[in-house]
Amino acid sequence: MVKCFTTCIGNRTMLRQSFFQPIRLSSLTRLFLLGTIALVTFTNFFYNYRLLFQRHQLKQVSYSVRTERLCPIVLYWTKFYDMKDFGIGVGRATFSQCSHMEGSSGCLTTTDRSFLNDSDAILFHGQDIDVDDLPPPQWRRPHQHFIFVLQESPVYTKFYKFRQPLFQNYFNRTISYRRDSDIPITYGRLQCIDPALPCSDFPRTDDVNTVEDILNSSSPIKINLAFKNRTVAWFVSNCHSNSQRESLVRELSRFITVDIYGGCGKMQCPTRADCDSMLSRYYRFYLSFENSLCTDYVTEKLYRPLMHDTVPVVYGGSDYSFHLPVGSYVDARDFDSAESLANHLKNVMMDDELYLSYFRWRSKYAVNPWAGDWCRLCKMLRDTNMKSKIYSNISAWWTGSVTNPTCIAPPPSLISSQQNLT
Image (tube, rainbow, N blue to C red; front, side):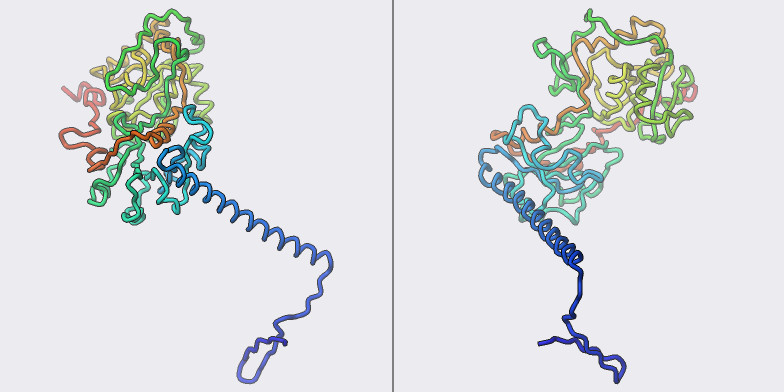
């Protein structure tokens, strides 16, 4: 039976068109069409099979080893800026570099929210949390850890949304730059070269810091000083910081030459590699100045000069002796004025032996820009003796109180001219 579609055009015109029209195709065309259909069918089948297999694998791992904590599942609920996988990947490969987790004993990570009920940890990036897009409260399981993740300082992340009752007693754990986080995240690490010698990695994890005995090291220090005749370099793009570091640099520049590269200065270098090469070859000091003075807030600015034969001049809210051996850096906040800081840098600049003493840490340590801190997340989730925990007020923990804030104002003696202070 021939099926037809009838379409009325105007009041009188009737068009009858057969549903099946005979189509004459060449053999080559028919072969091409059949091949295309087969390819699409196979691709669709393979994709769905792979997805089902991955889900089955995650489900199987989740249900079979829940009590043994052998293979916990980590779910990225939010993005980390524009990265859905928080920049550390998905699947088992995320923790493949963790030496204490080999083979199948690691953890699994996923962005698939259908695994919410099966996940041991759910990660929320503070800057990407949407209060209208949170896991349904009734779906939360007793074994799960809702983890607050944030790497920017409270100065730039004072989120009023976290003051809502919704977030009271909401998060179990924290991941941030803070040393009192459940999992502190850093931008680098000083690792002991010889584990057989008395030595502990930096940053320190204990509450009481230990001054390393590096000052009496007799190991030769190989730093080429032949062309290191420039004093201070600073690479910067944010010209209006809460720490007022630009004011400190302006004061410092009155007494010593500071070469400023980037959006806040008049000097340029084409690429990051060019900047680093120039730093290693020509400069003695680098300004590792943070944009805010907050407890423990230290960024990649600290480790950049260490990897390029340059002494960091630090300015931040952290106790830097927890991050680096004493005698390996110059802390601007140890000086009562920009002028006294400049005088110290001049003295070190003119004394090669004194300058090289700032590199004695190299006799025991090497810089590792990959700190491996994310490995601690998997290790924590596999800990069968892990105690329960809850943050009653995540906002108060993050910003502190009026009498005990986690961030402080810049010291007037450093950022203002002494003439203006008198």
